[in-house]
Image (cartoon, rainbow, N blue to C red; front, side):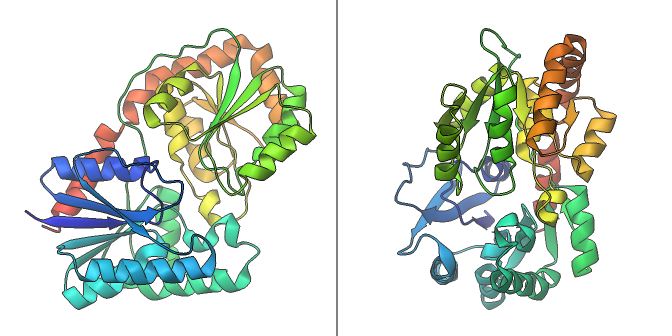
Length: 360
């Protein structure tokens, strides 16, 4: 049986994209191992159809963490049998590339994002140059590559002079009907990180007659909670922390509106196509999205949400417009229900299977 090792830098528990990819390939006959890292807050991993391994580190953030994780991952990969290594994002690419050369095994690069263009590096020029060097040095030397959107694939092809396939991060077909009842709320699901326009959303809640539920944690968790307290919005904003996928799907189906705004702080976000856009669509609820290429194109062809600027005034105005015009809202919701069959992992999985079948 052919073996694949996927490498990520998170703790595996909430990485739904990798869970879908790994389970799909395991079902199609591959022996799959997903490798990540263990954090002090990590939960026990759930049993699944593929193997999971978390590497323990002394450091948990900063350059020392990246150096330590790179070394640990290199030696782990060096001494484990594999016919294919799949590096997920640039932060695991170096050890994967080196081991693939030493062991003469096949290498795949899975770009969830444009790593050197994430907002967290915008004001860290030295770190940004390091990751740009990693990308420019190693990505063109990997034969098999894919990413999450056509816009990112085109940008990578132009930047690195090498083609990328596209495998979108869409959900499994689990058709939960919208269940909006009682108190209406806006839902944000995902990482609480820079560039997600969450501060602007919180400030907009002063002028929106709904509540806000935030499912997730991240670098801005503490700051956002302090902002809610400072603004006197404790009765309107509820931080749910990490929510298990099955509970999150149920929660999403109960929301009035899904929030997916981003600020333009780098090409990674500008060319993104996030999983939450499709999670909201699958649940049958409209979403609020940035005026970026992938979202603009999808919403022009499928009226499943609205485009909005990422400032608090625009956010409040758009939500209140939907509340005041029920026919507009219900038309968006009806289109979500009609179109969600087209954006499911069952369709997208065929691409990932075909891509890896060429490596057998």
